[in-house]
Structure formats: C-alpha cells, structure tokens
Amino acid sequence: MASQMQPVDVHDDVMYPSAIPFLLVHLACFGAIWSGVTSEALVLCISLYWLRIFAIGAGYHRLFSHRAYSTSRVFQFILAVLCQSTAQKSVLWWAAKHRHHHLHSDTPHDTHSPRQHGFLYSHFGWIFARQHDTFDEDKVSDLMRYPELRWLDKFTLMPALVLALICFLVAGWSGLFVGFFWSTVLVYHGTFCINSLAHVHGKKRYVTGDDSRNNWLLAIFTMGEGWHNNHHAFQSSVRQGFRWYEWDPTYYILKALSWMGIVWDLRMPPKKIVRNEHGLGVGVINRAAEQLAGHFNSASIANAIASTLQGPELAALRDSLARAQDRTADALANVHIPQMPTREELTATARAIFARTQSLEEIVDRAYQLLLTSVDSYLAEPAKARS
Image (tube, rainbow, N blue to C red; front, side):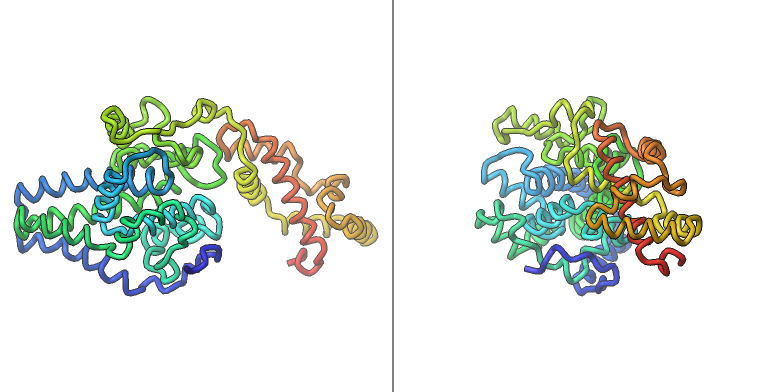
C-alpha cells in the first residue's frame, strides 16, 4: 500500500477520476425537477439521512475507527453495510484514513487539515487525490481479520447501489432522486463538515495539540459528532458529548442497544478527562508547544539580537552556542537577551490561546526550548538573520 507518512501535497491531482461520480451524484439531485418531489420521497430522504448519519457515527467512526464498544459480527456487518450505503468508500479505507488523521492531526502529515491544506481540500478535495485512493492495511489489521469486511472492501459501492434500487422501487424516480441522491449529498457534507468546520469554528475545552473544536450546531446535524474537541481529548470514548447537556443521540441509541444486548463494553471517558484534570501525553504537549512557539517570530528575534549586540559580543554568543552543541537552547537561556520573550510572556500567551490544562507549565517549558533553538539556528546563519 502507499505510504501514509509523506506530507500531503495540496496540489496533487484532485480531479482524479473518482471525483467524477461524486460530481454526478450532486448533479443527480437536479433530477427532482423532472421527477417532482413526492411525500414518499421526502420521507425516504429524511429517514435515510438520519439512519445513515447514525451509521457513520456509530459504525465508521466509533466502532470501526476507534473500537469504542463491542458487538457481534452480525451487527458489525449490518453497520458496515449501512456505512457503505453512504458511498463513502469501505469501512477499512475509512477507518485507516481516520486513524491516520488522529496520529497526525493538523500537522503536515494530516490527510485533511484546514490549517495545513485549506478549507475546501479538507472538506472533500483530499478524497480524490491519487495518494488517498489506497489505504495502509497495517493501520486496520484488527479489521482485516474479518473476511466479510474484506469482501465489502472489494464491492465498495454495492450497498449504495442496492439502496438506490430500493428507493426507486419504493417511490419511483422521485424516490431515487430525492430519497437517495438528496439524502446521500446531505450525508456527504454533514460528514465532511467534521473534517473541515469542526477544525475551524467552535470552542476548545481541552488542549489536544490540534485545532479540533466543539460545535453544537454540527452536533445536532451529525447526531453528536460535533463534539469534536471532546473526541480528540479521549478518542476511544463511545460518548462524545461529555456533559449531560451535550446532545449525542448516537450514544443514546448505542446505550439503548446495550440494554438489549446488541452492543456491549461501551467505553466511557475517565472522570479526570471530563473534569479536565488529566495530564497531557508527550505528543500533545509537543504539538501544543510548537503552536505556542509559532506565535513568536524567531527570525525577527534573531535579527534584533544580531543588530543589538556588538561584533565581539555576538561572536562570543555564537562561540558559546557552538561549544554548547546539543545544549544550544540551554546556552541561550543562560544569557540575558532583552529581545527574547520571557518565560512569563510565553505563559501569558499560552493562557490566552489554550484551554485550561494541568500541563500548561510543561507546554511552556517545551515551547521556550523550541523558541531558543529556533533563534539559535538563525543566529548561526548571519545572512538568514538579516533577511
């Protein structure tokens, strides 16, 4: 399979042939002008939207991507068929791409980050890039052991085609255009908004090292998937609306199914995380520190230092940095440089841009080291420092 560790090229061939069916599905919605809009077709459209949005949240996302609960192979297969009736590729492809997203969320390696690649690319453009046509089987080795899921991967569009035929048989051409195509397009963009809007608009309750946000409006239209910052804080939780007032009907339905014995082992977020009293992992701290350090212009700071220090003083500083080798940040930290932002300034900036976290001091410490090292790299190249 193609490597998943290369940074995404936003100039990749977005008009890959797979984009043509996607465009045709949208154009098919205008077929309702010819067929008319019947009450039966509207009922189909509304029903299929909510059924398949539930399948995406409960199936593609919480079960196949995060294993947030357990179920039988029969119900797992039913969910997989419902998922693929949305024409969003196979559960193996979807889960592999989503797991990759969480490993590299909003970094250059993320497949669909608005910060890195722009809003439209993160919303749907990335799907049609040639490099995303395949998936890394190693990322879904737990799912690959099910032959029925591998079979569905070979016949990705079959559930959607069967559903389209059923809609036609139930309500004629209006059932096809309105019931199937309208609901499919609405499900497309409801899902895609989590990749795009939920990383741009909303509130951040937790420091997650990325741009994930809680968006109550998206939570309504996606049956709870809009609590995206919650989800990134504890990815394997079956419940994404952590607070009682956070609307999460996908969880409510799964909870009801657990009472009937259809699903079980529902994983819940630890109380420490819900109360925001948990320490952050090293990876999250490093990502947050990079964000914090990025708020300060290393080149400008280095340029100011080079302009202020006299020739011998600057030479002595560079000599000290050269002798420090791998401890250049420590060497800079021990030198009084008025142009360098103080640790207190970094802390104030961190409090302004991040949600409350017990790991704030660790983020600031790491960010200060990153900033010092970056300034050192500019000081080591006088031409670059003067640019």
